[in-house]
Amino acid sequence: MVLFFVRGDVDSDRYISFCYENYRNLYPEGLPEKCTIIRENGKKPRLDTDMVEFNLSHSSGVCVVAMSSAPVGIDIEKIRDIDYNKFNFIKADSREDFFEKWTERESYLKYTGKGLSDLRCEIPPETHFEHFPVFGEYHVCVCAEEQDIRAFEMDINALKGD
Image 1 (cartoon, rainbow, N blue to C red):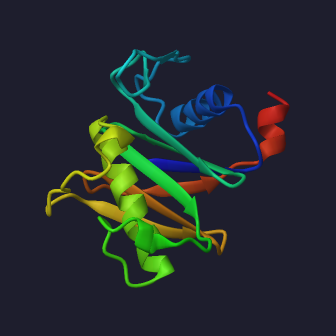
Image 2 (cartoon, rainbow, N blue to C red):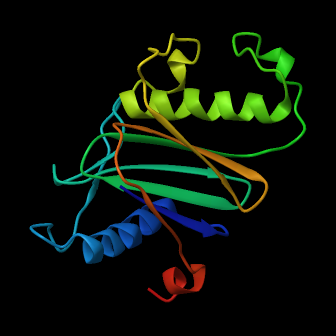
Image 3 (tube, rainbow, N blue to C red):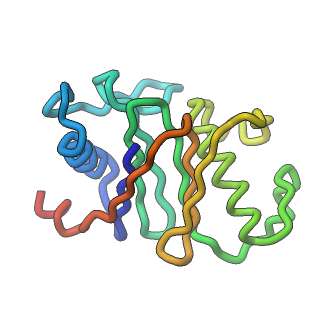
């Protein structure tokens, strides 16, 4: 699995395509040269190849895309002051604990394709999560089968020059 981070405002579709090109450069065997994003009502977006799964999240000027050969869900949140007690279905002891659990929940819902409509669902205890603090003030969580993860910070200027 590869995570691609970029700071700044980006067009999501262009960024996903840009990340796919970089992913393909890392894992070129048999991957199509170009892919199209397919959106269907009530389903999570996907590429027009079964060889690559992706998921995208953004928060306060940072965007992350996860690409993998297996299903994946990802969430990024800027850690900030929030009255986390309003979300009583998430048992949190601190602001940091809240954002860790919140990103788990969102990444799980994105992994399953259920979306936020099922925000209060039970998360099976065997669900695998990977947590990452990034840029000092953001928390990222990936929900996927256990696998090696590589991460890259992308240059927004490279995307704009595309």
